[in-house]
Length: 235
Image (tube, helix red, strand yellow):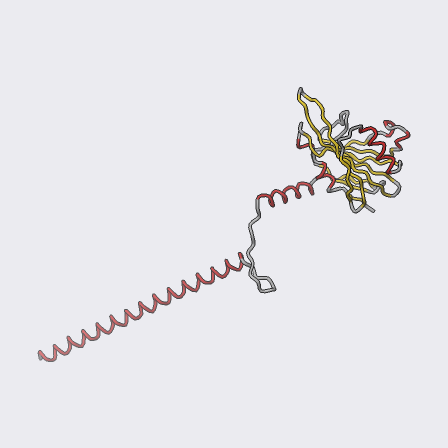
């Protein structure tokens, strides 16, 4: 009887030991499955992120997408602001130009010009509602006077030997650019302007485009180059 009890106890111990081993194997299998699953998920996430940051072009070369520098952001912002400017379009004389949204435009009456000037149109743009004596900060004048005569006339009234003359193109049309300085006193202080006047001829009409490149009194007024970059002839 004791031998029979001993065998039963031994069999029970063997069964318990077998069940423990099976449970250990199952736990190890589950743990291994979890680890493999997490590794697969992590690998998928890494692949997705790498595809977003390093797109592969058709040539098979992997490139990175660089972050925009502060200067590039400023240039984009500047370009966007110019695109949002007002547009002045003149169908009669075939040109258009953009100017800041908070600026004003003023068309001169032809009576203010002498007959010798042969002016047929003159418009100016400025950041104030009334054009003061001395003119606005950007202007376009059209004349029937010959191009060479217009340039000679301007040099005669300029009377300053400190101007600089150079050639350039405006909307693919050859032009003459004259840069000069203008000093004046305002609010008890001396101020300096760097002014520019560009002359060109199109369809028997002489265009005179002028304005301020530098203005020490208010630098925000000196937008000549920005405005000029939007000038173009239209059909």
